[in-house]
Amino acid sequence: MVTAPAAQQDQRLIWSFWLAAAVTLVGGLLPIVFGGTSSRVSAVILPFGVAAAAFAACALIHNQSRMVVSIVYFLAGLAIVYGLMSMFSLPVRLAALGSCPVAPNPCTTGLPRALSDGENTGIGSAAAFGIAALFVGFFGLVTLYRRTALPTFAPPVRTIPPMSPAASTSDRPDELVSVEAKSADRPDDPAQEELELPAPEELPELPAHESTTSTT
Image (cartoon, rainbow, N blue to C red; front, top):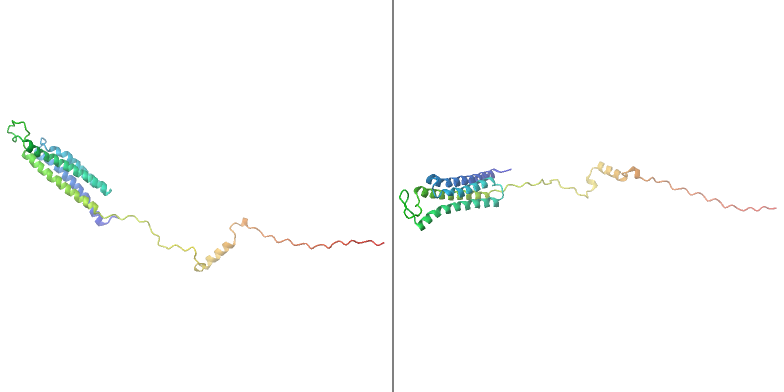
């Protein structure tokens, strides 16, 4: 039976992972919302989508072992970090190579365009949502490790003490003792009972015949 504190911990755990999945998905969509589909950071929706799916998987398999949930959370964190690095690589590349003026100004050097306001806002908002999703998911992971273990099923324990094999007959009723005594004297199988025949009587010895002599 699940206690009330354990049920509350399970609810916080599940909602933490689902909230992390929602925050990650929104963070992946923000660069498209602010910069449009032509934004150079719109591809961040792919790693952020993978991270959102991983957080949702953590919410679904929270009853599995802690190691499995930790591995899935680690994969979600890797996907978010990859998305952040792919976004921040664009301003670093522009700062190292140089850039053209923002459109509609003409670009005569052939270098990539500078960051637009939409791309700038999309990078910042996506980074903020991705980091927030990591912290929310980490809260769920901590709740998982602090969750009270459910009580295991214990087999019923015998409460009546076993009877001693060497119990004396004085502790038992007289009727039971008399019945056992009769059953011990009487053989189990009447067919196997051997009938005792009386001993044969010895015949008396006959006296020896005396030889008589005829007298003439």
